[in-house]
Amino acid sequence: MSHEFKMTDVGLMSYYLGIEMKQMDEGIFISQESYTIEILKKFNMLDCNPVNTPMESGTKLSKFDEGEKVDPTFFKSLVGSLKYLTCTSDYAGDIDDRKSTTDFVFFLGNSVISWSSKKQSIVTLSTCKAEYIAATFCTCHAIWLRRLLKELNLPQIEATEICIDN
Image (cartoon, rainbow, N blue to C red; front, side):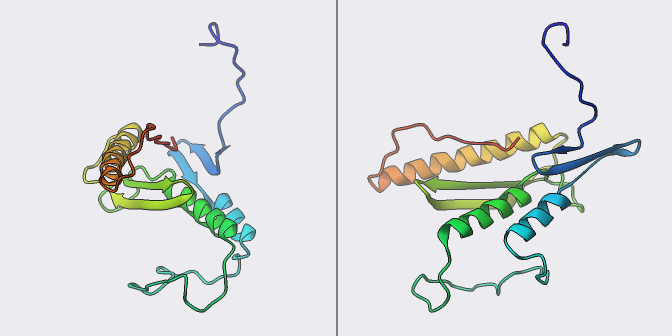
């Protein structure tokens, strides 16, 4: 390839898009520990107590409830950071059955209208296949949403853009 394209060898990859890589004889190990610490620092949560479930199951929230108002830009940045953290590098993420997780979120304008995080029904043999399954599931949901919006007299004229993190 170097005969055909101008290339520079910068050595083994060790950090890319918030993901740390350690290449050893036993295999390639990835981690997002540094990115996680950056998020905790950015949102002043470094000293928080970790919990498995951050709120009680079944809690209903309303914008009319009493309480402290939240800056929507701050909240969107926090959710986006956490979404990136939980959605990257999940190939064979379930340690028991080695299934990957499909995650997606749909926006209408600047508002989230639908999201999903679901374990894939099959075990894939590569990250490429796991991404393909995720993209297919997302596309099926996009078609369903487009049909729903059309029924609500809000037909979508433009193509639906699907962005994949890989």
